[in-house]
Amino acid sequence: MERREFVASLVAGGCAGMCVDLTLFPLDTIKTRLQSQQGFYKAGGFRGIYAGVPSAAVGSFPNAAAFFVTYDCTKSLLSAGGAFAAPHVAPITHMLAASLGEIVACLIRVPTEVVKQRTQASPSSTTYNMLLATLREEGVRGLYRGYGSTVLRESLWSWRQGHTLYSWQAAVCGAFAGAVAAFVTTPLDVAKTRIMLAKAGSTTASGNIPLVLYDVWRSRGLPGLFAGSIPRMAFISIGGFIFLGAYEKVRRTLLSQKIHSDCP
Image 1 (tube, rainbow, N blue to C red):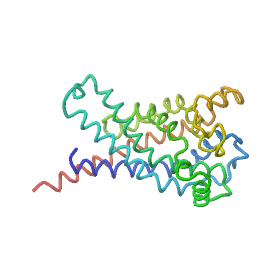
Image 2: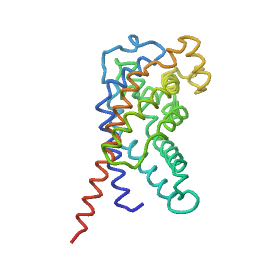
Image 3: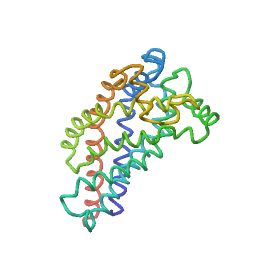
Image 4: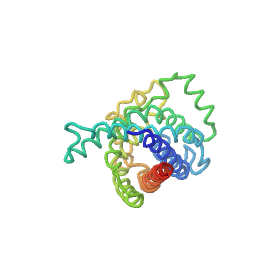
């Protein structure tokens, strides 16, 4: 990947991610509280709907940029030659690039997600106090609680994204594909939320996804496994529309400006 393409991916991914996270933050708070073990109203209901937004703001740009830069670099390297350059293996190339992108991005996303969700479920606390409490009780390891479930959830969703399209096409495809993927992966999102919010030392905090899902099924049944699916679908479908459309638009604009500046 050329340097100008690298910079374009970095800026476009970061801007698009921040735009989505901050614009649709109330939907994310509602989803988290619906999925929490204590229940929606005990977790805050509609109060303090922007609780945890500083964590999202800090992590949004680097998280989104890390994914798209890793994704684009990996896809470019795999497509440069060899077996992965063939058109019929393009979907496999995309899946590998998306998976690696999520593994890298989650190194940034998970700590901010842990602090954000714990603050959302405890609106009387602040983002800073929640960060200090997590570090004091669990250390840095506590900030990566739920890393595996987050990577799995995001990878499954990302495999449906990342097509090279014009901005309006990317926006439309992102909205529809995002809604379907959001609903299908909701149980994983429920597990991730429960793991991140669980008390240190509890069975749920161990991060055993099948065990967490079974516990939710036993206590709340099928509705529990799909708790928060509606705000999640709304967030990801609208977010996919905004993210992919904004990403393509900003990236193409940056690259076209570079081309024009190089012209005599």
